[in-house]
Length: 112
Length: 117
Image (cartoon, rainbow over all chains, first blue to last red; front, side, top):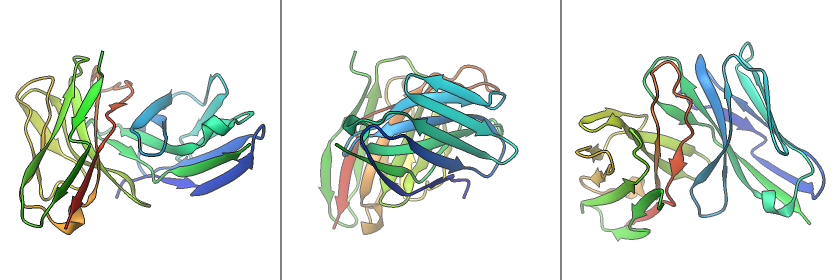
């Protein structure tokens, strides 16, 4: 399977702390995206990083990409209870097949 | 602007029955796709389409059919439902751009929860 792996599978932190989750993938990519899923809802796009970028910021989100290690990390700073959700990485491959492949997700719980 | 609309929200089928999950988008997106989400498995790609009349298989296509007769609609057909197809199904769409830089985010519907008994 080309599916990515994310770790940790679950993460519980206190409000105000930072949360870091990691994603690894197996083949060359065009870009990598992070999504959030609130319980029982569809996924919402957070941020996209291209294969020629190493770091990207959006508000309290910071994403890094290391193509040599085939890995990415998502950092959420100063977390809030509303950040409680599952987070998924998705990769778009350079094979030109338009397949977006998702990782297994990290369940984040932010305690108030 | 409704975005991506999936119907029904919930469905219960008996083994062997067939049904169609509907997906419609009003953003003029060329790319549409179907995923299933099972506990601990993340999202797995079933089928996708890059435009009307063009479809292709994803990671787990067996037991499912799709067609794309219009830009807006991308229905998913279960031919003969099996308990292994109990899952939450998500439809997603995006712009395509050129093939070397499909850098558009996916827009998701809210899912269809399917139970096969």
